[in-house]
Amino acid sequence: MRRKLSILAALIGVLALAAPVGAITNGTPDGGEHPYVGELLFYVPDAVDSRFDDPGGWFSCSGTLLNSRIVVTAGHCTFGVGLNGVSTTHDGADTNAADGGVGGNDVWVNFSEVPDFSGLPASANYGRGENGQRYLDRAAWLNSQPAWHRGTATPHPLYDDLAFFVHDAGVVRLDAGVTRQTYAALAPLSWLDRYRSQPRSVHRFETVGYGLERVQGKKEFGGDTRMKSEPKLDSLTSHPALAYMVLSNNTATGGTCFGDSGGPTFDNTSSHLIVAVTSWGQSPNCGGKGGVYRLDQPDDQAFLAGFGITP
Image (tube, rainbow, N blue to C red; front, side, top):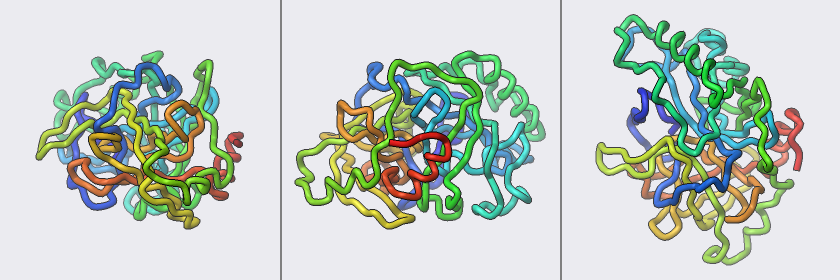
């Protein structure tokens, strides 16, 4: 799932089958291979944080620069993001697509391989009635840091937070451009269909993310470091709303783990071609297969074209 942030550690809740995920397990350090992949940190005013009497929670995800301004990520990493600390849903209670949840600017992206959270105000420094002050202090600190780039979040127009795995794509438009020698490129329409009939024991995709690397019982390991893995294809679907690849997750290939969502899946281990974003996982201990949401379908390509992104 998208990770609720305390200061450096994730606060992971109850994990269920097909829960939103991200991150990398049994992977290796990115080693500068994907400098256009970053970690998102964002504030959702409607989220509940049990440490405070008033609502408001902080989360992290992963995302990928497709040009200097546009970051693609998961829909559930963009829905309900606050607008200067204020809810972007109509009443702050219901959480479905009809309630808005679009256009929040309380999201920041850091493209460092190991983002620096050392100055982020710790939740432990605030009393139960000071959640609003925590937001103000954190937003001020993030705005003052050159490595943290603020933006505006927009989920897929058909995204529904009550069924996050449906149309699970989103975009963050950065306020200012981030220059890279190379950006990721969007896969063409129906690109992944070529793998439907090919032997699945040969081709390796590449997934990248910033979340937990391992969960063992109640203990979590790793996080906030860009990692990569090389999973194999398990299954492929092209249903208009449930357009997914299911990828392997084991010690040989690596895979995804609970933590950040929205991280990219690239066509192969040497490609800049993004074919999907990490969405959900099967296992509460990061041992099961993971689902990545396809970006090569007509509705997703039309959504991204609205931000100037085409194959």
